[in-house]
Length: 371
Picture 1: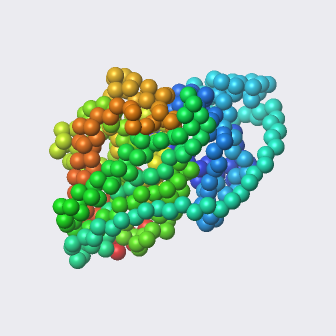
Picture 2: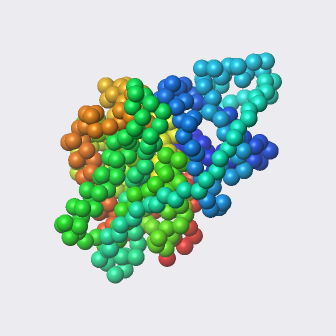
Picture 3: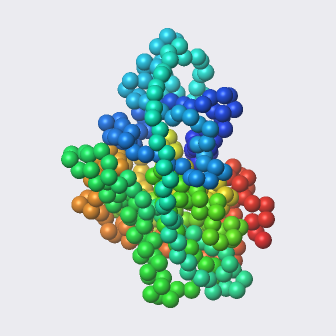
C-alpha cells in the first residue's frame, strides 16, 4: 500500500469509522517500537496535557469514541497473555506492513476516569496578498504553518517550558519572512496568496481542519496548500523530502523549484511514521485541495539520518527544542527559496494544480472545483 494511503487509514476519522462499525467504543494504541519518534519515558509525559476537539460536531473526528489509551510497548505483552499470540509478533508484522491476524484477547482492562470539559477559543491568523490577474485573482494559493507548540508541561532536566523552536517557530518564521519580503518587493502574482498561521496543530490539526472546511474565502477558490512544519535545517540541504510528492502535479512544480537550487527530491523515506497525515496539509487534502509538505531530507543510513534520529530522541517535543540548538542557516535559506519559487510557480501558472489520475485522494476533489 502506498505510504500516503496507509497513513490516511491511520487517521482518527478513518479509525473511527472502522471502530464504530463493529461496535467498539474505544481502543488501546500500542506504539510500534520500530516507528516511535521519541522514547516512552518522554512520550508518557503527555498524559497530563488536556486533549481538544472542535466544538462543531461535524468537524469532531473523534465523536463517538469514548476511550483512547496509549499503552507502553515495553509492557504490552501482558495484554496478550493467554491469546496464543505475542505483541512482538504483531509489532514485527506491523513493521513490515504485513497483514495482521485477528484473535480474541482473554485479559480485561478496567479504568475509572474523571473528565472535565471547558470551552476555549484559539484563533487562526490569516493574511492576504491580492493577485493581479482579473481572471485568477479570486483563486488562492495557501501557505500554511502551525504556530502552536506544547506550552508548559512536565519538566525534563528541570525545564518545563516547551519552546518549539523547530516545531514550529521555524515554519511560522518562514511564512513571516516570505510575507514581509513579498510586501517590501511589491511582488505581484496572478493568483492571490493566503498566509495562514493555524492553531492547535498539536491537538490534532484542529486549526487547519476548521479553516480548510470553513475557509474565509469560497472553498472552491483554494487551489493548493504548501505547508511548512518543522522543516529541520540541522544539516545541509541536499535532498528535499516531500510528503504528497506523487499525488498531484504539485510534485512536478516542487521538482522544478528544487532543481533551481540543485537539490534532489524524494518521497517519504519513513512511511511507518505516518507523517503524511500528521501535519496541516492533510486537512486541505481531505477537502480536495492538492497539497504537500516538505522538509530537509537525507538518505537512508547516512550520517544525516543519524542526526535526525538523535534530534527526535533528544529534542522533539522537549524543552530543549530552543534557540540554543545548532541551525544550518544556509539550509534554511535554501529551503525558503524553494518554498518561494514553488509558490510563485503555482500562483502564476495558467492552470490550477490537479490531482494525478491514479491518486487515491483525487476522490475528495469537489465536482465543480474548476468553476
